[in-house]
Length: 164
Image 1 (cartoon, rainbow, N blue to C red):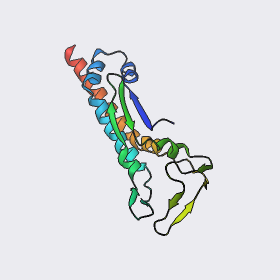
Image 2: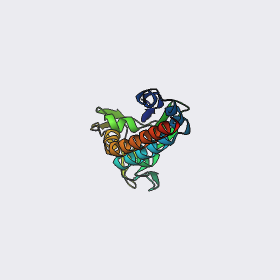
Image 3: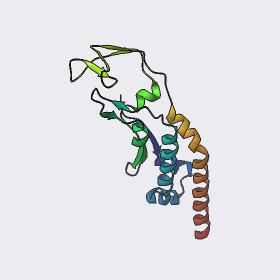
Image 4: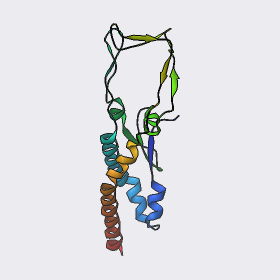
């Protein structure tokens, strides 16, 4: 399974602009993309679930709650757009998992719950329900993204009309 990602494609924005030459200017300076990506990251992260802190048998913190939320970021992908990315296990959260066995990878037994804790050779995991926090984040971001598109569309029309 690949890492969690959402992509904004510049080519779609350019074609929606009806072929205006200045759409390329908006795309090159990445004003629209940068603002859109920041809005998406903020809204998707706000919807991401925050798990509980996890500790090993000695009581040391092994996984901090909020890792998925903290991992959500964005980066540009050249002239084609930008992506919003998160932790590699994000798709399992979004799509859920079927019941499955968990076996130790590096030790002979699984151990959890601190001292004295619980140990087992194999654990039957019941699976997890899907949690499509990405979809909810995008839905939450949609009004702000529409405002960005309108504002930049107006900017494009104003530049075009001043050059006519």
